[in-house]
Amino acid sequence: MTGGCTSSDPIRSEMMLPDVLRRFPFLRAVFDRYGLRGCGGPYGPAETVGFFARAHGVDESALLRELNDALAAPTGVRADSPDTRPSWADHLADTIYRRFFKAGVAVVLTAGAAWGALLLLRIASNRDFTAISIHDINAHGHAQIFGWVGLFVMGFAYQAFPRMRHTSLWRPDLANLSFYLMVFGVFARAVAEPLHRSPMFREAAIAAGLAEIAAIVLFILVLLRTFQRSGKPFETVDGYILASLAFFLIQAVYDVGLLRATTAAIDRVGLLRVIATYQAPLRDLQIHGFAMLMILGVSIRMFPALFGMAAPGRKLVRNSLVLLILATIGEAVFTLLLRTTGDHRWGIALYAAMILLAATSVVLTLRWGFLARPTEPSRSTKFVRFAVAWLHTSMFLLVLAPIYMRFVLPAAATLSAGGIEAAEIGFSHAYYGAIRHAITVGFISLMILGMGAKVVPTLNGVDARRLRALWLPFVLVNVGCLMRVSFQIGTDFREWAFPFAGASGILELSGIAIWGVHLWRIMDGWRPAGESFARPTVITAEDRIGLVVEWFPATLPLLISRGFAPLANPVIRKTMARTISIRAAAAHHGVDLVELLAELNRAAFGAEGGDSSRVLDRRISLTVLDGG
Image (cartoon, rainbow, N blue to C red; front, side, top):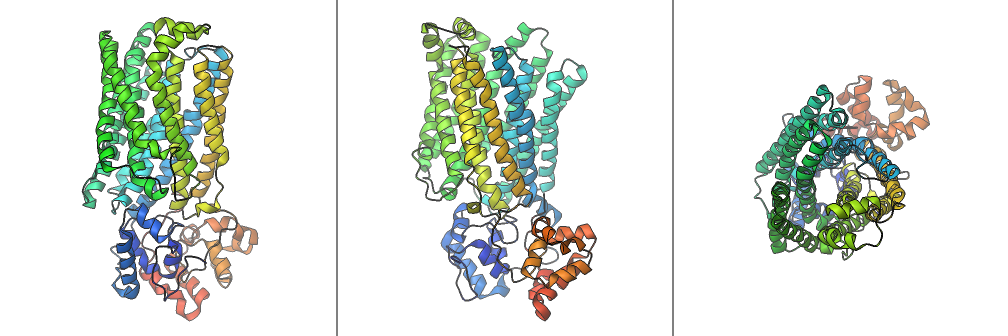
């Protein structure tokens, strides 16, 4: 097999990482020092040594030299002592992303995209974007920002950022607490805000917001301490991450304040006044400040390694960061000044901030869209390129907004009832909704889909080349987004555009659901049919029990005699048993793990025990908890 290795081969960049670790498991300690920790299970992800070096920001020649030095003198590689073996906190840190990702999928398929699709159908039925409760709309929007985007950002950051800096996550227990606080906040808010007229539910909604603030504070604290413990200096690209974290906290505090104001409004006039004045700045802080800056920071750092895309110049990265922060703050501040003072001169400053935001983001990302020439084949590339195209579309619509409001609508020969109202007040809910949708679903959600499809198989040791290309969810989400943006603007001119805009949510929801189920199965241990598993030189606690029986048939009588009777069924061995580790099976049957591993290795390898002493004394450097 190409990229395989024998005991006499030096480690080369084109070798597959699982082949190296299966043959030389003691080299795991070297890879762990540079961020492999728990990624892909005991044998690592299905990628080359060279790709690992690029993805983790390691000098490739230095890594190869260190690996080959360790290969020449294996006794010099640090083995885990009883005091340095993986603890429960290590296991938690390695698998914590799964609970965030799964919760994010659960949110988007309930209070997020699913609820949004239902609201959109109600809008289409009433042919009016203001026909449904603003509290329902805000609860749905909150679930999308905090639950869908927020949970994925948190899970990805807890897993990836320590590895980028070649360290381990500080205080995984606090990271885990932030998960429960955020999940409580998202679901409690989704239920309580629409029922806010009851004092009990109003207080519950505010308590949910405070829980989310606490979760975000813990999230920022854990990341900052993790960065600090790495000892590595901050780089310019880290500024995007830090700015995003600051906006994440600011918008959460702002959001609770807006919630108090909207739920305290005594009548519809007062409610509309609060929404018109304060809601747009919140969305700017959430979408442009938190989500966009985080995506850009991760993209600048990872796209050249993951996809082989061009890296922006350092000067462009530095200048863009400053301009994007100023533009985002300007959007929020100038909007508030315009709405509170009524002085239209602030509108000029606001428009300048919008142009600055659009120009900077387009220039920074131009070579990642349709102009990209990726060198690393990946099923995620199409998601990333179209996400960038949707970002540019949103920015183009944003810059055209004043022209549309002041000139296009008043000059139109035919307008719908909503279009007539928009022309009279100089503001179109349909047009601004289209701008928001292009960036939230087109850019942010497609980026989540693309990066999720890339990192989840890698973290679970599944070769993504054996997985389906996810064309169906890609097409459904893009077609749905195109329908929503175009037909939503069209509702200003023709009533018949409403049903088409309404149907778009079903397409988007279907695409995200297909993607979500696919990734959920991988996180639960599913592997593609026909995937080849190389026979290891030692049986470890993380090997799947069904595969152990396939590799070493002599272990089957032993396992049955130790109480694993279902393994006598060949169907069980080929299905369920291929997803359960020896560690989990031993715990379930109350069998001593150390003793079982020793017996399995003796049965498989005879008197030599397949180097079982190494398994019992060292173990695998970091393991992945099943179903974590």
